[in-house]
Image 1 (cartoon, rainbow, N blue to C red):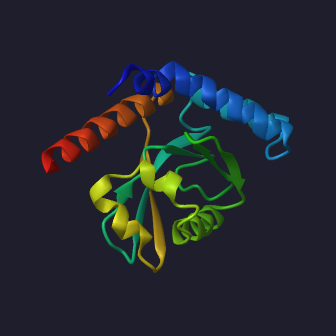
Image 2: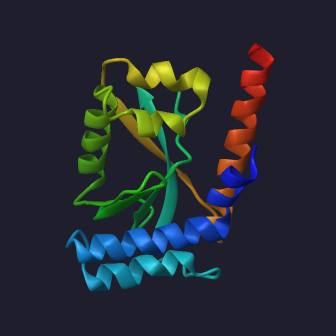
Length: 172
């Protein structure tokens, strides 16, 4: 890994990107000022777990293997995500979905389109990417991110990149 990649995925860089994307989403009318205030609480080191929960998505097709996507964070009001859900991605999006079902449908639409699925696939293990591009129902599961959120997300990204690099080197 080079220093640029490590700097981009450092906890502070993720923290700064999250704040920037939140601000852009609020300016664009995607979220309200109150939602922005609440969403900023995920950055607190000792945040109250009851207010918002943060997850990495696990994606699968046709009830197959669940594939982690460490390039995105899903934020919801409770553990069941039965209300509004938010998605922050490292490739520059911050989106709001009325329900988890709407999020799953949007993800399936994106994964079905080769022009749109590249960003998601870049943050999924290489050997499992073909499974996610197969036709069929997309299932969304969740893996909770521990606090502090951005430090945990940074560590997950670093581990993901290291494993991908090792797998590529093994195949050479």
